Amino acid sequence: MKVVYFAWVRERIGMAEEIVDPPPAVRTVADLIGWLSGRGEQYAYAFENARVIRAAIDHAHVKPDTAIAGAREIAFFPPMTGG
Amino acid sequence: MKVVYFAWVRERIGMAEEIVDPPPAVRTVADLIGWLSGRGEQYAYAFENARVIRAAIDHAHVKPDTAIAGAREIAFFPPMTGG
Amino acid sequence: MTVPVTIRLQQADFDTAQEIAALSAGRTDIGAVVTFSGICRGGAGGDAISALTLEHYPGMAEAEIGRHAEEALARWPLTGLTIIHRYGRIEPGQNIVLVVTASSHREAAFQAAEFLMDYLKTRAPFWKQEEGASGTSWVDAASHDDAAAARWTKS
Amino acid sequence: MTVPVTIRLQQADFDTAQEIAALSAGRTDIGAVVTFSGICRGGAGGDAISALTLEHYPGMAEAEIGRHAEEALARWPLTGLTIIHRYGRIEPGQNIVLVVTASSHREAAFQAAEFLMDYLKTRAPFWKQEEGASGTSWVDAASHDDAAAARWTKS
Image (tube, rainbow over all chains, first blue to last red; front, side, top):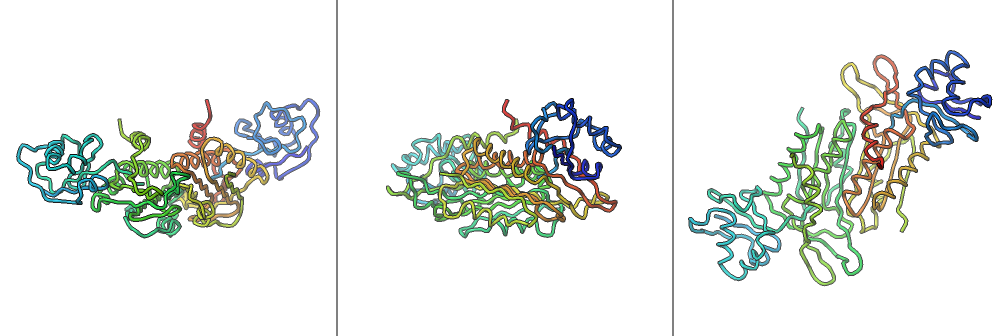
């Protein structure tokens, strides 16, 4: 499963994308944030305020309780500031 | 007192402007419409539906009960269709 | 700082890009520019029109538009405002009216432009006459335009 | 008839006049064209910025804007729609985003443009980073933008 990061989430983690293979117990977007947060200090820092983190699965916005099964690409990023 | 007409009010009356000298009993815009209507068939036709006629005194919209005393220029026209 | 306000009544066409540039050139305090262009429609079928002729009340048109420009400046934090209204004969596809509003904030630019258009439609002394297959006729005022203008009235 | 919809994400600047012309050329069924241009502000005093850098999520940005363009077409009777969003480094006074809506009716053109801008602000995956005197920093999302976007949600 490909995970991509943007803006300060990307900067804190220190990379733009990676391939991860979470265990089966990681079922939802929120589960994945929790699992990633345990991978190191930079992840814990990026996700320290999980409430503000936005996620997308395969280019569509999703909520924390959305299941990740079947996802090709999961993205994490701060609130958008376009326009 | 100068009176000016626009759009189909102008067309029905058959002139764009004229100088009139109404008697003192003609105090308001509505009075003036009534007095003008008595001046001939073309005026009666122009003002036959007084409800739709709009008026301005010295370039500002006014209501039928506005006094005409001191007016330099009074205009009568149909509802505006600009923009 | 004085807010640049341009009001023009003219027979000639206008250039929207040039008007936007005139409001924003050399400035870095403008976050949003909204333009509204009103264009002559050709109608369809039996209602097809070959041209509009716009009559206006010189003097009052400038005064009335000026009053509403002042009101827009009082109600919204604008950094610039341009209103151009054409008169005379205008063919389908040609411009009739342009409103350009500039502000730091997009809501202000949008609302001021809508306010000004609603008032131009219902209060500015212009009258449209259509030329069609069956001759010329004066355009009736639309009641939904009055309703649109009424929403800006302070209660 | 198919409504022309143009969506572009690009580093290069855009030409508003050309985009209006592209939507309206050769047509006589358009009564109203609304444009919204979002421009990079320079800030002031201690908050002065020398540039913005816009990061975006390629693929998702196009998809998200496309979904909102479709929603705008479903909600308002538009005759054309153009959305251009720039990314990369943008200096004060330069364009960031353009929305152009065309319709027979001015209310539809205004409302669709406001709807699209509210959604671009809050849902399109772009992030602004400011360069100022004290270094670079990511721009915080504004809660009033979320409130503006929420008004379009069907209840």
